[in-house]
Image (tube, rainbow, N blue to C red; front, side, top):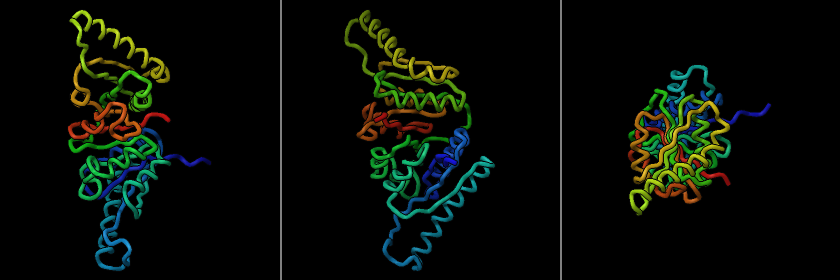
Length: 280
């Protein structure tokens, strides 16, 4: 019997990480797969005996964090298959390795431990470059929303955005909510008439780029919007009341298909952000 690929969530005992664990649990339930809760601990006294008082205390704290996250998940979604684990190692490489066998990797962004440096620190840069599966981050202002809001996806209308759009469509299909695809950028510099014509052409090309991807999800209502505004601000404004924001992440990590948008939205976004690497 083939093992079911889990959703993996990193925790550190903080409230943001606990929120990420509940969000990941709901995602696992939607996908009908198990949840794996991981505490990645780069022990401060690595190389010393685990019997010393500081190491015993650190291990106990890690165990308590995992146990608390598992209890919270089970109280929120009874019956979900969930297991917790404390693993020794640097969080970036350890979680990136876990992503090789995961449906999703979910993390918080402002915790008290390694999660606290996620958005701007080395862990985030490492994960954005090395995760294999989609990476979902709960930004500092994100809430554990339960409303069935839409999925918003940023796109540039080119094939490089296909992976992000495909992921958004699948997520919306699971949730039975619509998708709003937004293409944002600078306005044409020509006359008003030319600008209107250019906008209409951009909308036509965007519709064409979305049509093939949406064909596999006939029950998902797909709306599109072409906006001549900075992409990051446009996406953040559009996701109020949404369930998830999806952006692309290319070889340079957060500086991916939408330039620096992936990094910028993490500071202000009020909902979970999925960073999806383009297909090889």
